[in-house]
Length: 118
Image 1 (cartoon, rainbow, N blue to C red):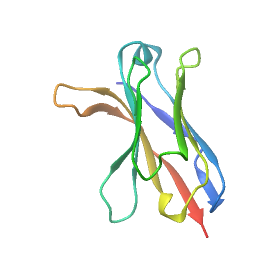
Image 2: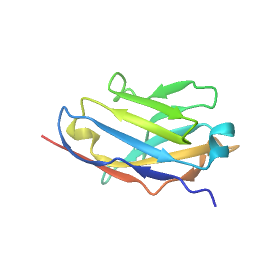
Image 3: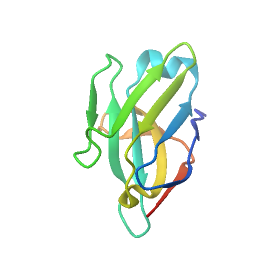
């Protein structure tokens, strides 16, 4: 059982910043791409940002220029730095790892809540 553990969520005012972390088993970083997703109430889960195991990154248009995905392989940790937060960024944020043959992520964390108030 692969366990991904997110942390760093919380409540912040619009314009503020948060940094999410996701710790993983060490071998995940060696072999797998990873991503951050989010899901707001009554909305579908959406991709926020992804990083492949060669370091290539991509972002949802809604977060480009505000969010930065990164990883520290020495700490087996994935990060999401979120700046200039907006109320519409309010959601449960999940990290995910290892794309399968259907281009779906195989492993998921439990999520960490981010709430942005005006």
